Length: 106
Image (cartoon, rainbow, N blue to C red; front, side, top):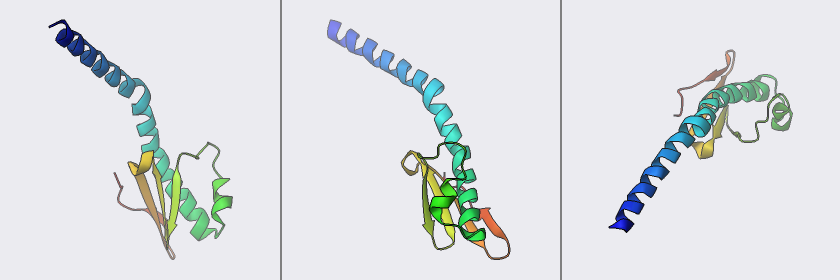
């Protein structure tokens, strides 16, 4: 019986720890990723297709560290993703219009 009570207490403590970690650590990172991916996709798309610069040059335009963001180029689109693709955004180049974000990939 003592073992069951100890297991229940441990499970409750782990649950509280997980909630606190989400609230104070992880939640801010996910919110930041939801802002950074569309911004990054649009900026890299404009750099690649409007300014016609190489990808390496485009990465130098960011003032913050974007090493956690993965940028992939496919035809006339740039996809930015983080957290293993959980949060991502895509910007598409259209001749005469420039780059625009497409439907969010949440």
